[in-house]
Amino acid sequence: MKRVTGIGGIFFSAKDPAKLGSWYKTHLGIDVQSWGGAAFRWVDASGNPTNGTTAWSIGDGSYFAPSNSTFMVNYRVDDLHGLLKALREEGCQVLEKVEESEYGIFGWVMDPEGNKVELWQPPVGQ
Image (tube, rainbow, N blue to C red; front, side, top):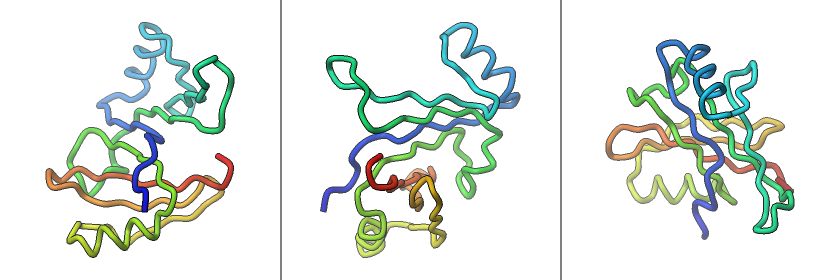
């Protein structure tokens, strides 16, 4: 089974998310939207659009619990349920919660350093 296929998003916390988002928009040109982040659309080597995006978002970090980390990486996977099963069998700390929505299926595992890692199986075709 193939495990991680790419990075779906990078999320990090800030003391003042709006102020930090404004800094990234002004100084680095990231198109930070009102929801606190940006979506980077994927392109091929020729610059033509392909299916997929990478989310980039600043927030208050409450979504990272039970981790105390200031960041969380979202990894794309092809078979979330299969991967979560394999991780449990390997003794990893897999969080029980799995969320399904129009955005795909999400699950989480804690790495050995206590960082919450988000695993995401996108909807078919994305």
